[in-house]
Image (cartoon, rainbow, N blue to C red; front, side, top):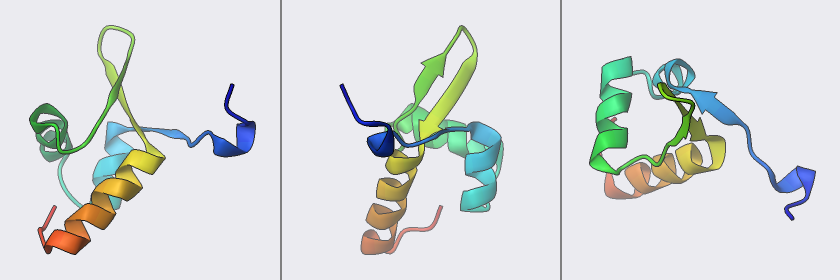
Length: 67
């Protein structure tokens, strides 16, 4: 079982869009394309693991792509 210090927060889509400075619909497109992993919470809500968002940002910066 993971230690509490190893668990990263799950972020709502709106928070991710603010961090990426993009629209909510763009975040959904990133999830649908597989570029940004997401977890489904219930029938409608998606959450992004903060560690996955960090990995996406690092990969994006390495590739020179924009959000």
